[in-house]
Every structure is written in structure tokens, then in C-alpha cells.
Amino acid sequence: MKYILIGAMLLVMVFIPKNISAQTDTLTVSFNEALDYATENAYMSKSAGYDIEAAKKQVWEYIALGLPQVNLSGGLIDNLSIQENYFKQGDSLISIKFGTQYSWNMGGRVDQLIFDGSYFLGVKASRIFVEISKVKRDKTEIDVRENVAKAYLVALVAKENFAVFEKNMKVNEQTLKETKALYENGFREDMDVDQILLMVNNSRNMTLEAKRQLLVAKSVLKFAMGVKIDDPLILNDNLNNLIIPVLSEEINFNSFILTNLVDYTISETQEEIQQLKVKSEQAQYYPKLNAFYNYTHYESGEKFGKMNNSNGQMLGLSLTMPIFTTGRRSAIVKKEKINLLKVQNEKEMMGENLRREFLVGTTNLLNAREKFNNDKFGEEVAGRIYDKTRIKFQNGLATSTELSQNEGQYIQSQINFIQSTLTVLDAFIQYKKALGKL
Image (tube, rainbow, N blue to C red):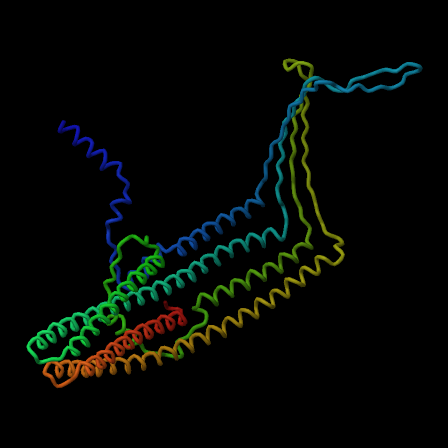
């Protein structure tokens, strides 16, 4: 019996799904680790990788059109009733049947493209599509990293808010405990107890709301990273560590290089593709030359065992040359040239827009830095005022109303400071993206 139980346990361990054990694993990531994880595992990143693989197959699909094309064909016929044909000979009608009871044939044809100007341009264009798929993958990765960076920061802010509100709640609960003790000994009024009780109630509501916001922020981050919503995730970074390099970053307006940006590279590639389209339409004026070889084997007779056979072979060239298209081909070429001018105009517009985004991003970062420093100073001052008021209240030198007002002022300054931290970090992300270094 003992060995049967051991064997059953081993079978369960062997056949248990691996993802069940993986569900208990906790993913712990820093800010940069979250970006790297998403680059490999985000849904958008995976789709971009599939696009590259599909583009590579499309190249071979187009190349194969210029390789030998071999086709086989065959057929089997049982003439159930052969039609009679009549013709007149003198005064008599003579009937003759043309055909045999059975016949079958088998043949093969080989076609080979020799010259087609549009084909070679098409092969080149298909290879460019692979390159543009890779560039688009790079753009997708940038977008993924941007989304994850913002989601990570929002989650950190939610985490920080929860910690701040929870701390304030504990302080208020301790103050309530002390105020009740003073009231029971006749040193405080019941209104003071109610006022502090109201502060505790408000701080509890804010703490619960912050906890729910943290849960939502984490779910958004998981989706952006490509992590299952139910899988546990721990953020082991904090806002203070992330803000240090942002404040020390040297801003250089001359560091902008247009050709380093993925969006501009895409517009350049699109221009190259459109130039190939123009050449491809122009190549339709050129002749097309193909070679072919055809082989046919045919057998017929009244019985399968006694059939007559014959073979046929054919080798030749086919030439197609457009002579007159009533102006349609010319109109198509002119249309593609106009589209080329449009693409070139859009490329120039893209360049100017990217320059504008860099200027705006740089300015926003500088402004966000200044506001961060001001809000940080305001939070420190409000904290000192609140601490002094709380000490005065404990010593009977301040009212509960004053304590409540200063607490509200302190909480608002904390919220403003945390929001400024998020704003400056978000501005830094946009600055790096505009610089092409995200």
C-alpha cells in the first residue's frame, strides 16, 4: 500500500501542469527591469515580432515567382457512349464513331521567368518591407516602454499615496487615543474627541481609496508588461531613487539628432518604397519574356491492357510587349509620382513635428523641475506646521479645529508633491523619447 501511494504521488508530480507552479511565483521588478521585461513579453512586442517573420516569408513568396514553376496535370476518361458521326457516300449514309472506350493522359509544364523589370523591383521592395517591419518593431518597443514607464510610475505614486495616507491614519488614531484619555480625565471637551474622530474617519477613507487605486494601477502595469492579471507583482523601486537622475540630467538643446528617431526613419523608408512604386509602374512599359517546356503522354484503347500511346513535347518562349494602353499606364505613373511628392512632404512635416516635440518636451521638463522643487519645499513647510500644531494640541495650546485645518493643508501639500514627482518623471520620459533615447 505504501508503494502504491508513492507511485500515485509521482504520477501527479509528473503530469501536473507546469503553469500551476508558475502561478505561485512572484515577479519582482525595478523600473528598468519592468521596461526590459515588457520589451520581450508585452503583447504588442510579440505581435511586432510576428510581423517581421511574416515579412520575411513574403520576401521568399515574391522571390519564388521568378523561380521555375512546375505543374502536373492528368485525366482519365471512360466514354460510356461514343457519339456517332454520319456522312454521305453516294446514296448511302455511313456512321462512324471517333474515339475509344478508355483514354488517359498525363503531362507536365515548366515555366521560367527570364525578364520582367517589375519583378526585380518587387523583390527589392519586399526586402525593404522587412526592414520597415524591423523599424516598426523598434517603434512598437518604444511605445511599449513608454506605456510601461508611465504605468510603473502611476503604480509607484499609488503605492506612495497609500503609504502616506496609512501613516497619517495611524498618527490620527494615536491622537484620538490620547485625546480620549485627556477627555476622560477632564482636560478635553467632547467636541475635541469628535473632531479628531472625524479626522480618523477621513484618513481611513483616503487610505482605502489609495489601496484600491494601487490595485488598479498594478493591473494596468501588468497588462502593459504582458503579465497575467492574477500573477503577483512587486515593485522594488521608489520615487526618490527615480527622481535623482531626472534632477541631475543636463539639458542640451543641441543634442537633438533627427536621423536617430524611429519615426523619421520610417518616413525615409516609406519614401524609398514609394520611389520603387514609381519605377515599378514605369517598368510596365518594358517587355516580359518567359520560357516554357511542355510534355504530354496520352494513351487510348478499348481495354486497359491493350492501349495505344503517344507522347508530345514543346519548348518555347513567350514575349509580351505593351504597345498601346490608351493613356492608362501613363496616368498610373503620374499618379505614383504625385504620391511620391506627398510622401516627401509628409517626411518633411514629420521632421518638423519631431523638432517641435523635442522643444516642447525639453521646456516641459524644465518647468516640471521647477514646480517639483517648489512643491517639495511647500510639503516640508506644511509638515513642520502640522507637527508643531499637533504638539501644541497635545499640550492644550491649539484647538482641534486648528489641528484639522493644518492636517488638511499638510495632506494637500503631500498630494501636490507626489503629483509633481509624477509630472517631472513623466516629462523626463517624454524628453527621452523626443531625444530617441527611451
